[in-house]
Length: 253
Ligand code: SF4
Image 1 (cartoon, rainbow, N blue to C red):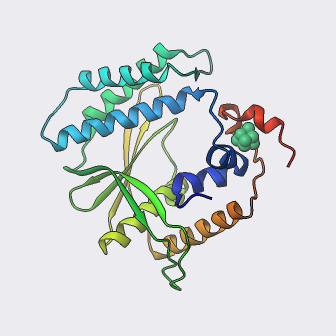
Image 2 (image 1 turned 30 degrees about the vertical axis):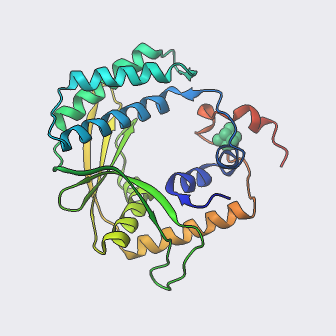
């Protein structure tokens, strides 16, 4: 058991407890990286760099951003990237550049105050005061002037209302921010869609005490499941991109 829990761990356990075990307990090497994951992580880190530069007063054109992105993707390709539907590295780099051009042109957020800021907070039930033994670790992607917490996603399509209202990361960030600063943040989800014509969508979302208490109980159940070694496969849409597919086929409980 690790010394903390994170939203990524909670999300992975809920998606597939066996994959959680392979990744966080057994720490199995990953034989490949899915192209979509490589694209998302390169876009994320380049946008992080762009905002950090902005913070220091350096304004870069999208061509600079695109060049750094291409270098990141080429570096990731040293390990195996698995493409689907006949894709290749060049087509993924082209798609990433298109997405970044849209982001740099259409980003309308406030002045960045912090980028990729880490936090550690205790997990406390705000109704009863019960405290879990593990703290929660995480990162705020972007904090803007005026207590705005921004989460950036690249997605195949824009999220619907239910996805936005149930999104665990935003709930965790609302909880962590209000715990640390003793005031509520404004929450915004920016979504770059990997559609034929990429678009940047921004949604202001809200979380209240009920959402935070539900999140506490979800985290509590997940931690209990991990401690009880409840690791079983949960097959679904995620399996075609799963790095541990072969291990999973040999699973015997
Ligand atoms: S292949 Fe599917 S069921 Fe098996 S570990 Fe991966 S995500 Fe879970």
